[in-house]
Figure 1 (cartoon, rainbow, N blue to C red):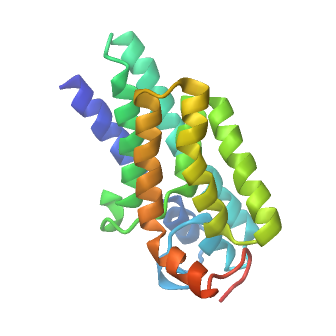
Figure 2 (cartoon, rainbow, N blue to C red):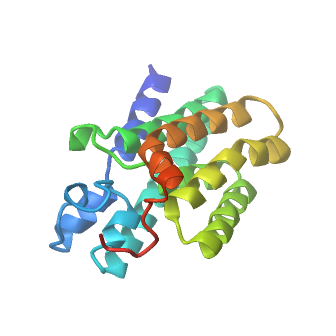
Length: 200
């Protein structure tokens, strides 16, 4: 029961869509109603409000980190199996993708995945962030940067943490993230994907 409550708590934390929360607080349009329709930092940036986009990015990343770190702390205190932390990591990510508070219309999970991976291993998060930044600097396309970083994440995880349960959990997150970017993949192939900062 304790394990289920912990996983449910992680999912609920993930369901806090900061793109929607920040936009409402700052009087901006619902990010699901314009641009890509994705409630994430990149789409919020299309409003021209860098602060709103930054707060969205920070909030979505932080909730992933908090959920995993809280699960790790509670697992230690309550003598729960270490696999609970990995389940919580996947739960908070799924909560972001399919948030119960926002009719299951969530984001694509890039920032939340970064927070989760950083909590699992800071070097893993740093490697993925460096990959995103390098690809973004060259191509200026957020989705491409995210996809490249996501595909490499399980490889980084295996090299840093071993090819066990942790790498498998990261692979699950990668597969979900790639699936959520299926429309972006089509646009990338067709040369129609918007660049970072492009409003429409």
